[in-house]
Image (cartoon, helix red, strand yellow):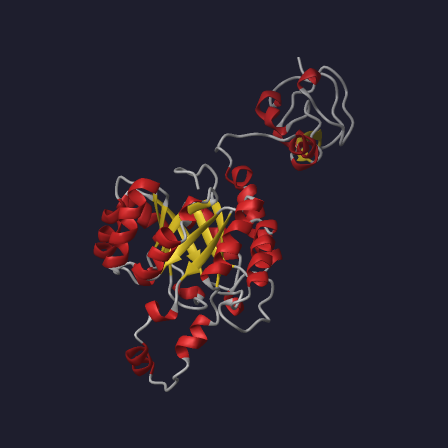
Amino acid sequence: MKSKLSTPALIAEIGCNFAGSLQRAITLSELAIKSGADYLKYQFFSAENLINEKYYLKTLGIENTNIINEINSLQLSKDNYEKLFYSNEENGYKWGISFFSVEDAKVFFEEKDFHKLKTFSFLKIASGEITDYPLLEYLSKVNRELKLPIIISTGISIDKEIKKVISFFKNQSTIYLLHCIVEYPVQTKELNLNRINYLQKKFDVESGFSDHSLSTIWAILSLFFGAKIIEKHFTDSRDNKFADNPISMQPSEFLEIKNAINNMKNIFGDGKLKISEKEIKELTYARKGLYASKNLGKNQVLRPSDLISRRPNFGKNDSKYYFQLINKKLNKDIKKEDPITLSDID
């Protein structure tokens, strides 16, 4: 990912939508790129390092002794992640990672050396990790050398917390703050897209939108609020009811967002008037010309009641010449409803 994006980037959050299948992970990654994604994003974690099983279950108020296995069943093994990342490398697919523990981050950077792959493009800090200071401290140390762009989701985060997480990576590389609502799916009334602008101005960084809605329109609309990054969960079908598939965008929807990004320059324009050839042709039928309201004789002085404005406009009879014609003497006879031009007066 470039340090400064000239065009907004579209990130496909693959997450755990592959449900532990390497082949599905590879297929989803390829499909996302073909559907317009500029970057892929994965979640690199193990359940043992993600949750405290005893208190997690207690907090949820459920009894389930298999939750560790259930969470891990959605993930790839480290060896399969290696195959996935090298598949991306071979195909030139750019990607980034969210980490959820120091332990798993160390596997990525120290045990497997995945960070040496050329297509590894950014680090992502999830909303839930914005106060995980041990993790942030480790990633900060790693990134002093890598100098990768840092993308930070700011869901349920107050300004003080955002300022703190920025401090870990300040002066290392470009930081992007993503407005995010931690609801799956987010309700329309909760979107608050003005937050995108606020983050940019408040923290003097580029901002974007991590969108959990079931629509494409809000992601597209975020461009008008200055979003430089749009992140959406990606799936081949929302009919898959596991992981985040039900709240993800399908290929045609991703293409819709990408097309809006590609056309953004034309949609926004530069504010200067540019009249197209089609508009010039329409001018004849859209604007009015001046015509005689009755038969008029040579040497007759034109009065307001002698003129009517009607479509079409032939240019020479443009109604903008009205004040130049009034009180002027005609140099020829003009029949009722014939056009009147400046050449018809002395």
